[in-house]
Length: 117
Image (cartoon, rainbow, N blue to C red):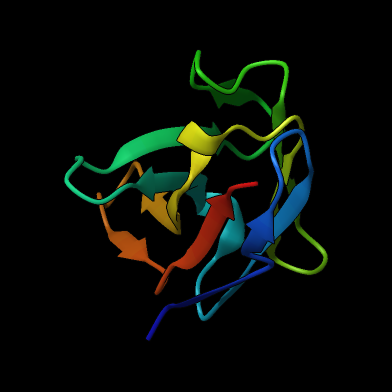
């Protein structure tokens, strides 16, 4: 069974930085679009950033210039570097793996990011 295990969440002051990491296992990493999504209480889950095999990335307008997604095939990890964090970035952050050919879709258990002074 595919496993996505997130780490790196926590509490940080506004303007601070965090890096999230997602370790993927039991899948052919190159076949999946890897992404980070977030969900705040009372809100729908929204895409934060995605990266396809080959390194092409897509970031939500709300995080462009502040967040950077990357993937490493050797370690089968996907990271989200977050800088200049704002209180509105507070949410549960979820790693996602989506196979465009089979439409298989997997989620990690989530990691909490809280931005507060």
